[in-house]
Length: 415
Image 1 (tube, rainbow, N blue to C red):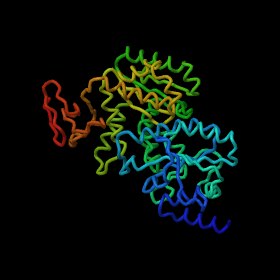
Image 2: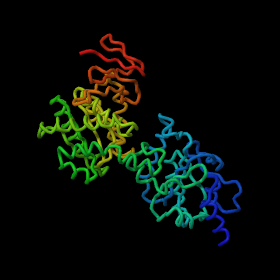
Image 3: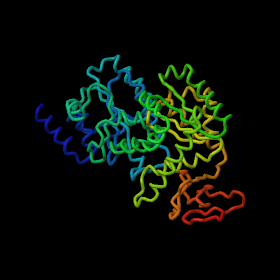
Image 4: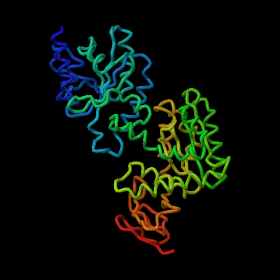
């Protein structure tokens, strides 16, 4: 009735606790001890499992949602992986709950629901009645019969009305799924595209098409050729057509070698400017990573989806990943896209290669400024040695009998 509707609306708009909000959205008043289905244990559990948790509400119908289910599968797996804490949020404090919206729970719909439920290791609402708060779901959460993923904090407040797009674009990198996280990720690589478009304005067309783009460079011509051939085979593969993915490639400098030094001068100047700032620019780590890969043999590779950079990696494991496509091709359809499958295999492959020193050489560096720079490798982070203005980090190992500082100190080598 109207009184019950306004009571629920008030609780939703001035929430204090996530469990109370879930009760308001889903269950009728006569349900005193609500339970949900736990897809991991395949048991019914108390709704109290959500108390003091952040909740990704997956709200959808039953039709054509398998892409979204695969997407959430990658998020579910990402929540179990390191790093366990990002931006002050612990992954263990996040839960996924599927809220199916069904007008008529007939036998056909129940069978479809049961099939979908088996694919979900997260929590599922099992409640075969019209949802008590369906009007609020439509009005306040803006559900329009298309899948959405609102994110609620432990107080039950909506911190993101629909994280679907940012999760599709960024995957687990979007954690903890606030709108501000999307903004930061979108801006994270603007510097790269700005410099790249200066030397090749035609790249703008590939970016606008929102294709997968491999941009790669290096001084080893044989490696460049092998990588080009490997990507070409992937592009033409039946699996890629089935996944409806479009893959483009741009061998940097192949058509005109003169653009290469112009590009690197721009990146180095940008880095020199950033390092002089009193506050740390969040993009500086990505710039450091690229500058270290510039020195890497045989080359470097960047994979993006449109302007959204998905992976930056070194030449040998990137080539091995592309060549091994037949081994991991099925993952393209199982995972949430080509980029997710590629990165997962690359991360495995990278472990098979010996860890090399990271080098950074800067031209036109301000002579009066000598900064300690931390290694851009996330697994390392130690201070790099300064050799003239070449920065080097061996990730805590020794190379050529030279002891590398564990961090905090800067060594200046004489040339």
